[in-house]
Length: 339
Image 1: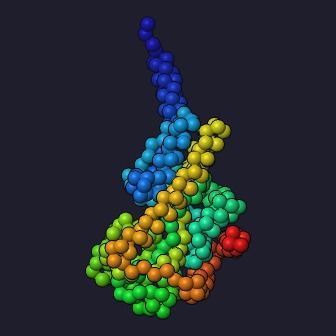
Image 2: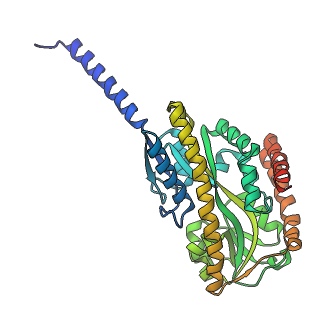
């Protein structure tokens, strides 16, 4: 039997359509999950969150979860863009979210949360749900859960810091983010934007006197060996966002969606637990290795808050414009959670 050209063309088109549909069906069964932290769940908050997400989803659905830790697919800005484009289905990021959803910056207002449980109550309550819905509309990414990068603290190699006056004249490395420039300047320090990869050299050579990061980051990256003093001021509570591409999420069955949502919520909680453990362990470890660590009193923290919060709030109002209402909404949610 010989096929004419039109018949061959029709057969080729039909075969191509079948292959396309088959490929689409296969890809819909795989979730690519990317983050920038190490894979080890015992030392990595995002690593722990990703693994428990994988275990739950694969155990309770026919979906497969492929993990891409340690920036295997790129940095945070790159992987969150991949998620928007549908190349990666799930990502866990922190700072990159604010670039796509400016309202998320309100979480970085200094000294907003007096403790981690207060932050959890806010993020797991109505405010967190409303922010997630707002960011979904802005980005096309659904927030499945909130994890934790932890409270950020100042370290330096010059002197102990107990009050803002002790920060006068000290050069602090900050992320190249305007909010952090405002924060350090308001406290009397000299903010110096430096990329993360260049930080150890900048500390070792005296380009900067200090830096600010969560305790786990400081300890796990040996920054404590380059610094003598740390104040546990907890100036910013940094949250992780566990995100899924909305188009992909809507392609799942209702049963799959329910499992993915529950797995995301549990993953966020798991990440928080690992971060809290790493913080507690890290404080003990840096003290044991000779670092001087100071826990400020409530009165001393108030001095930091009274200087930093108004300055950053004023800057953020100008930055957010019509979305500045999110500042008031967060403050109301924090007040309710604190009570």
